[in-house]
Image 1 (tube, rainbow, N blue to C red):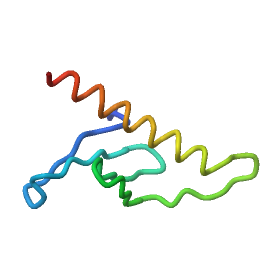
Image 2 (image 1 turned 180 degrees about the vertical axis):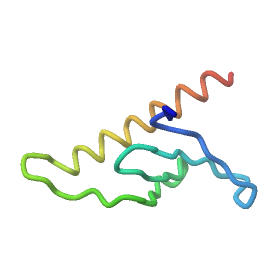
Image 3 (image 1 turned 120 degrees about the horizontal axis):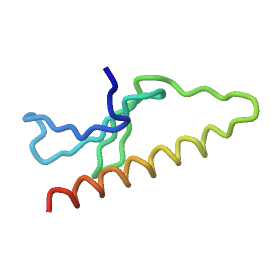
Image 4 (image 1 turned 90 degrees about the vertical axis):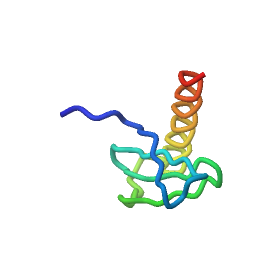
Length: 74
């Protein structure tokens, strides 16, 4: 089964929260309001790869995904 790279998530225990779940490596769950991130995979430094830039790009993509989803609801 092919899964989307990002998913919107919510939970009745946190009715005011919206989360974004990144399903590919490195997997994480981000609270859209507070920007807190729970990592399921630990991204590691590799030679020639700027891990901070990679993470920043993933977070930017997550926000673009969220914005596009919210526009689709309107």
